[in-house]
Image 1 (cartoon, one colour):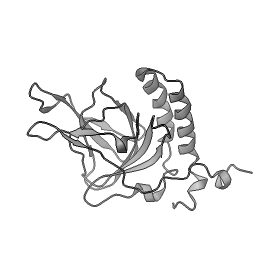
Image 2 (cartoon, helix red, strand yellow):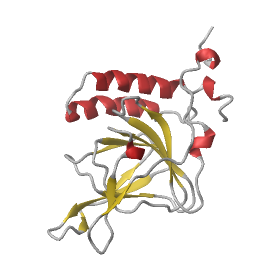
Image 3 (cartoon, helix red, strand yellow):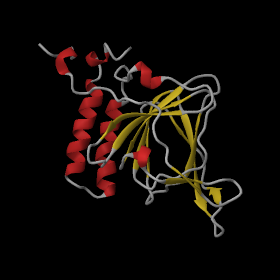
Image 4 (cartoon, one colour):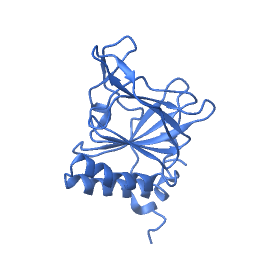
Length: 205
């Protein structure tokens, strides 16, 4: 699929953005927001045909983070994470709430906690996310983790929703030797999908 024909299938992403915008406008507390947003994200994960092919391309050396939508007030953002075979993040935090939904393939997430010296240590067993499943993160729930593609021979894609413009948030990675290093992730794409051209919708008369 290219952006020229994406208009026939982009509607699920638009519907998700509209529903999430309505949800955050009511300013629910974090538990209520995550509880209400989770089924919205699960609905988006049912079919991947809405995701433009250009925003599903892996990089041979590292994962990619493509921006799909940023709320104009930066209350949330939606991104696709594209994982090449065996690719992984460093140990990192988010500083905001987030939902991670598996669209294709699978990924493994290992949570970490900080010891008294500020060193990140694994906490609990890794969680494997399969297509259609959703995991939540936040400073309240546990915000430090490392994520990897569960497959060494294929691409995996996850859809992430964050409670900020995540590509502009100042966050930290946690090296094995201890301490933290600040980073701002940015995005892999210079453009975002056009959600608002309804002229190509298949349901439009």
